[in-house]
Length: 380
Image 1: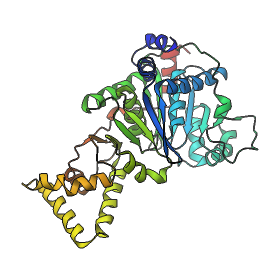
Image 2: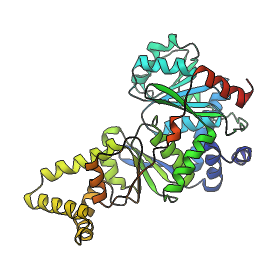
Image 3: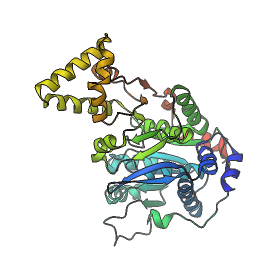
Image 4: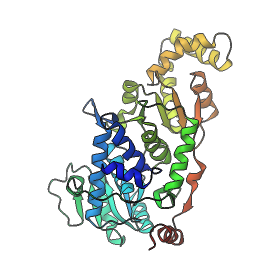
């Protein structure tokens, strides 16, 4: 009933998408995480519960609509819980690239006036502790993974387990299209998207991509990037595509081979990595295998009579080897692939679409923009 009430407030926001599917598809799988060699499933109902706990934890500490909370972590399910919890609390959710150094982190926290920072682990916590005294708005640091921090105690810091509130039943917060939602850190600048702008990006991508319920995707990029967060997670929630999370970044290729996703949303770097992997494998193969591979690529690129045969035999095995044997929808954001990589993907029969969302250029989140957004949305 709580989710139904939230949907009634506004059916056109990411939290409302979540609430709708929690109500209608609660027992279905929405996320999976590879943990110690086993894919562990998370249902819509479980996702909704995690998000409510984060949102309630924020409410308990006095977090208000329009406040900023940021996440400094590698891509993992907890990133999604926290991000969606911030949005559900009508806050502004910021994603900070996990490779940011302490000085860059401090600059982002000051410029955004971040009140709550969620960090992944001890390594990311160390960065936050170095600069917190120079971030006057920062009130709380929440740690996702407490490994190595058993004896750590600091009044400003808490584990995610201690921060969330499974008992508090916060009332749904009304969310309007003009309210600020997503804070992006891009090219050294802070940029913000309103809820309406975010939903427009999702709708535009949805109209171009033939996504189906229960399609499978593997989350390969940092959640701080638009392609992974808005055109990955949010779009997948809307389309009911199952998002799968790596065991760790070093197992990306192995997880891709095992999962064989039907959807791949990534950037030029990942495509180049896959291309390079096959080129290296071909170079180390037998002479006959090298000849067959070169013949197949050439035949497919030239689109001659033998192109179909090349794709049905040699290149089918190549796609399966890199984890794309079941691939149905492929799209990329950011910079275009090199001409060589584009020819390679086309040769494999992959219809690669570019969904970069020019609207994500946004407007810098400077003082004037921030105040105007808050006044329009909250009257403060």
